[in-house]
Each structure stands twice: as C-alpha cells, then as structure tokens.
Image (cartoon, rainbow over all chains, first blue to last red; front, top):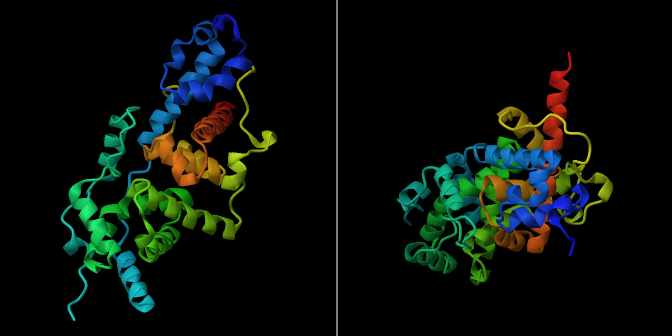
Length: 78
Length: 230
C-alpha cells in the first residue's frame, strides 16, 4: 500500500493512471487529483483528447472498384 | 453462368453510417458487451457459414457488412486513399483464402480486424515508415515514450483541440500507438478485443493507449506553444 492516496506523489499517481482509467473508475475523483492542479489538468487533457477522437475520421465507403478488383482476383485464384 | 452479384445486390443490410456503429459501441460502455459491429445475429451467422462453405454471394454480403469499417481502418492507418483501397482489397482477399479456418474463438469482426491489422502492419514495415513497430510499441524504449507531466502546469488543451491539429498529431504517432488509439478511441473497441487483435495482454493495451494519449497531448501542447509565440 502507498499509504494516504491524497499524499501520493505525481510520479506514483501517473504510474497508476493507465489502470485507473481503464478500470472505468472516475480518476478525477482520486484524492491525489483533487489536491493536485497538475494531474487534474493532465486528466482533463486526456479526457478532451479521447472525446475529440470520437468526432474524427467519419467512416467512409470504399469505391465500387475495390470489390470489382477483389472479385477479379478471386476468379484468378480459382 | 450467372454473373456474381454486386455487394449492393447481395445485401440489404449494409450499414449506411459507420458513425452510428461507433456511437453504439460507445453506448456499450464497460459492460463487456460486444461492439455493435461484432454482435452476432442469426442472419449474419448464416451468411458467415455460407461464405465459409464457398458461397460467393454470401462472401459478397460479408464484404458489404464489413467493408466500411475495414476500409476506414486502413485509411486511418495509412492516410492515403489509393493505399487504403489496396490494403482493403488485400485484406478481403486474405479473408477469402482463410475464411474456412475461422472457428469462432473470437467475434468474426475481431478476427477480421486482426487479419486486416496484419496486412496494414506488413505494408508499413515494407515501407519502413513506422518509427516504432507494433512489437516495439508493446515493449517501448523508455526514451521514446511520452513525457510525463511533472513540470510546472503549462498550457492545457481543454476545450481548445483543433480537429486538424489532432488529426495531424494522430498521423504522426508511431504505428503501434496510432493503431491502439484508433482501435480504442476512434473505433470504440474494448481492451479485451484489442488484446485479441494484437495478440497482447489487456494490460499492455491499456498502458499503450495511455501512452498514445500522452504523446498526443505532448504534440498538441507543442503546437499550442508554437502558435502562442509572438
């Protein structure tokens, strides 16, 4: 155990961060974050990046020629 | 001999908006549910079984069901339309060759993504464009990892991410980081699925995603700093 999580160092907190985020726990509610402006800003940035990523890269259809090439290649391989 | 159907003729269930898929995936949260695109239903399972038995029309339906996600993944990874088309073609040709070997150990969509990822990574390695290979991303050199945030509070990004800047930063990520970031944050796959696709542990997937986000943060903050200079 690391003792009081509110007194955890930034190094220790950031080492735990991947698992904390991936576990679905609210990392922002961690006692260290509530007491640390630096790690609080870090979390906010990472959340912003993840949210912005969802708005990126609308998925697109391949042109019809792709299927035509696939069909031709399949016929050649038979 | 009858002409083989076009994918459009073969299937009436083509998803028309991949964004909907992503939204549905996000809605599954952490419940462990499969993403919408991977959720099997009886009709899809029937198509798969027929395609495995060599039914060309069923293969065309499978193409229709998955082409958007596979092409989009290729495009996001290589950032070039012509190359993404070639990779999509190669992925589905490999699918055609290997489909009989699919045994259902994972969702078909996960299996197909894994196959596609291998095609994409082979291409990246051939071109030597990847600064860090996937293997290296899984066991990164500490000197190449993103910086931690132990310095003084600096510019924060909140509410100020420029879409183009983020796309540029993602494109500049080493391939391994880019792949995990796209699969999780853009495509909405869960870590257990990514671990299956990349043949790594769930813990590895989690930590690499975190490092990818840290790298993006570093890149975006550097851009912000440059723009803030008089």
